[in-house]
Length: 429
Image 1: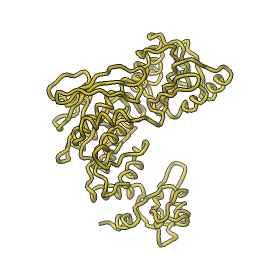
Image 2 (image 1 turned 90 degrees about the vertical axis):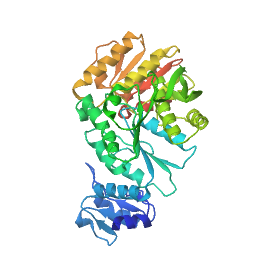
Image 3 (image 1 turned 60 degrees about the vertical axis):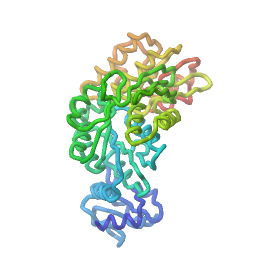
Image 4 (image 1 turned 180 degrees about the vertical axis):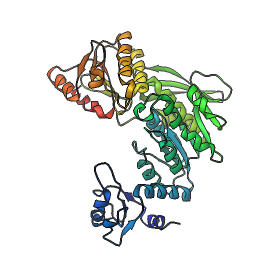
């Protein structure tokens, strides 16, 4: 057992922020583009940390400083060592869209039978994933770990740290193209989870059988399937949308029995997230009744598929992330909703590289062809599109307009990435 892991067992709380140093914790001096955590090691020790892990010798001014070649690598190796020591069953979750909601739904379902540790918020990167694993205790029976990426090779790195026993790729779409280079690059990177599981004894994957891209890369991996449109004998869970006005109401079938669930999620596209959670729950022995209860009780947060009813309007708020795939799903759902009058406030989609203008134009073309006329576009990318919709340079301009000319009596879709800050608009609507 490594020296660092021995110390971690004595001090099982880690921090990477010198402003948040619980007594007896271990500080990891990470570096960023504009900061050097090594410079804060002494402060962290003064604030109450038991040890500080550093990688620059000049900051080793205290016997409680642990010098390593690279702090980030040490954090990741420590997390992997802890994961191996506990042997907890782990489900790895990745995908272009829906992975955070799916992760939370899976956890909600599994909690009906097990003690479950799962990724908090979107701590799904090279730092957040190790932090999640280091929260594992011997009492945790299953962990659900979300893994995100915006460059090739990043899922491989995370999967090597997590060593999941099984996994799910929610979908593969047009996200982070600037980093991946192409849709094929996205597919290869997400598929790195499958590659890891191919080399894991007793592994399996949970797969959307309606998705031809996933079917094309799963190969001979043992798979448990769910679907809406595909009919086959090996489909474990088959679902269909009953309605979505605005909350998703759906039914699902397994082993010849049918079940109905009224959810708190807006968007027919969320049926795939629901079916994934149901499939995984059944696989781990959760009863169908418990699955239905968990799915019906789940309430979204963090501005994902939320319905907010204000004094003046009804808002569908989805302002955490936006890419062509998620935007198309949100707009399609909004167009088919039997509500009037409709209004959309949409923010720029980032990281699309050479196809950025084309993808933004597709959005406005879709809106025009589906007769959504009251549309406000926010950001410089939408500003360059060819349309007659109202355009605003940023969210501040929108806020100024709403203050001078309030909007009321509308069903409003607010969709954009976190960087657009459209989450600031509901209080004015």
